[in-house]
Image 1: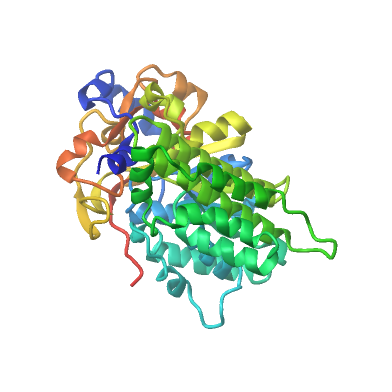
Image 2 (image 1 turned 90 degrees about the vertical axis):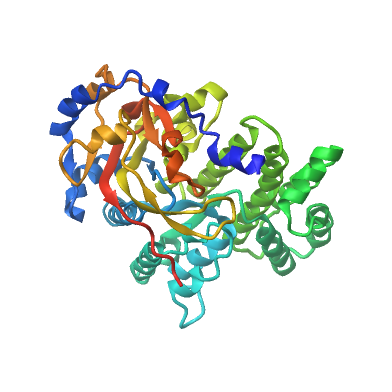
Length: 440
């Protein structure tokens, strides 16, 4: 479907040959080889943790949505940032409603006898493997154990920040309204009915708005305003309830915006989704207090500063760019992740059964092909000002970006032309990678 293809792949790829025309692999290999820090065990992350740990946000990327090693090392980095540097939460490129169930689990609020695997098995939205996998299961169990002895206010949360999950958010918001602010329930329900009538089919809604110009934008904006205008009760109430209600209302409103725009050409739908993710991150920082520090998990196309890539040619934003603009580049640390070859979980089309697909060797002249020459099987680079001034590295070089839809035969088309040392602050590279193992 054209609208789906756009928002998955609107990262503004150049024709690959033109993207790498200025790459100089031999010079880059000689320049970068002494800077590669081998990565075999957790202690090898010391330099990365020390540098990244002083920031307000640490953004951890991935060049696919289905690589075990990316999830594993993001988990190890996250654990050390939490235990050694006082980070407050993890927000991931996933649904708020689904991930909130996992958040409840890691904070010890699930029914006795529940496991992380039990919670992850409830995740139904495609691509299910992105979060219902054994690496996330292990991280959730670690967080739950870590949280056991911490005061309630200091427990580390795991949240979704994406725009999807609107139908479940509607159900949850109505339940919250009925339980905690029943006076507003009739007004909320009446306005939500505008969206609900499309039988939980967002694309039916998108097509209807495209044909007739009618939308639920006004009604869903009013729902958000009702939630934002809620006043604390004189007898006292739980601010977490109002925060949860606001986040659900944001998901509903911004999902409507996203799907209404997704039917059109151009970057508006992508940018709508990105802005929702950024607003969600801002809300989590505010909710956790002035000293809060957050860890963000998302694809490289979301975390690697878009203004340092050809994404900027179509005015396509991402959270890496927005976070640097809002907080300052000196308060954000962006870590890219990549591989040369291996296997990956992906689908042949939107909604397709998950397949384990080969990832062919990186295209000649890409930054991954350069990194594969550096020696260690796994390593990371910490980009310095010297690196950013080095002319062969400060060129638009192809940087691999595999989505949930993938065709290995067209791997040559899966690259974003990037000034890599400016797009990221660090980069983790694993030469040979394998697929995620879903929770079954």
